Length: 229
Image 1 (cartoon, helix red, strand yellow):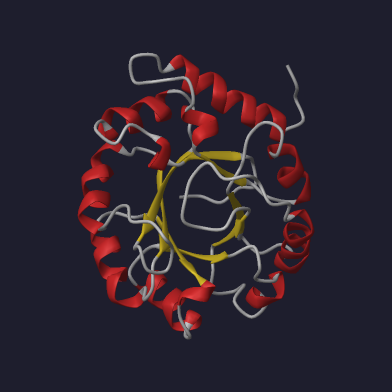
Image 2 (image 1 turned 90 degrees about the vertical axis):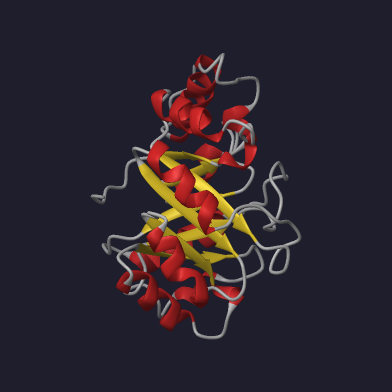
């Protein structure tokens, strides 16, 4: 996957129809999704339980863009190879999930994936200051991790701090939580380029009515790019 700072919309399939993941993934990609975001939760690091490596591997044949896997689990390191085997393109671990984040990021890259590091709302931007040359993506949580559909927490000052620290390094800033057409411009202006959206993409649509997904994706992208209908 090549690097660029254009706005990318990454629908979270946590908001998709759980009985129909393959067609849901195909529908959002056909309607303009740039990446497909998969939230992995363990019921331990966060208070919810979602997918594991076998599910992610089952999703892979349907994903033709970028499969972006966000691990909200602890520990991370024992599962890195499993997610690589599942076909993950970008694997993100939380800085709060373990004591040796350098080792984790090195292991992710060594397994052939792009390495991401996620920051909870209460974790400062400075926590990744010494990780910038080990990571390909920084995920700024704008909700407390664990559930979809939460209210957006304003992290624009953190995003600006990260953008300044990153400089010209090829590191994406991803926003996860409460992204919709009203919040997308705030985070894009601050320096984010990957916008994860769950309910804001899937609300009102289905695999039988996928045009709604397309309209929702366009609305978020246009808002982030400063184009209002």
